[in-house]
Length: 207
Image (cartoon, rainbow, N blue to C red; front, side, top):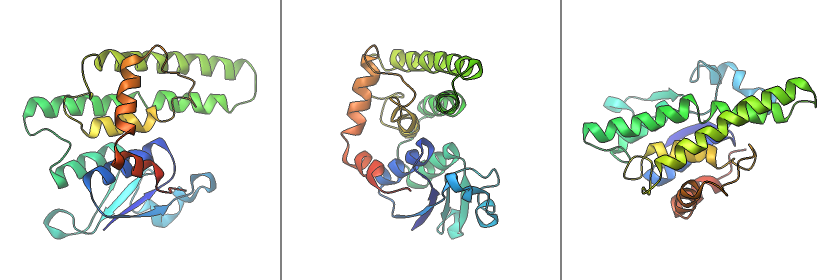
């Protein structure tokens, strides 16, 4: 059974969804980031950057335990372990990896900054920060909407890239991006959220 160390965040939900879709048994260990539990020495041993999520797989490569931190790395590891949600052909792998990196590098950090500035006191700093990151977040949603035109999923078949992106799209209302002008994103979102395994991944308590 995989041990999942996490909290109820977009990055945490990526992994619970993936584990449910892959049918892997796992146990949740909550790491309360509002109480700075991510900085405790025991967690630092498996997550050197003090960030959730992280996993410990007792049945890692060659049967030896392994710990993995960073949500993108975890998704790649789990796809390799199970042989699922990652194409076998090199071109397909490139597409999935591109969109996974797109999420990790932009569609996560940018809306995360929106969340941060929305919690700041009213004033010029809040206004500047919100406008800057909200504009970029909306641009990224536009990129995703264009990519999904004529596609059910971002890289052909359902993949770990979809799980990664969904974790953040799940918070679209919080970062103030309605789907009214994003019909392809809306259809993709509904398609994924209708899947029983995805629903289980969002329903399991992570906090």
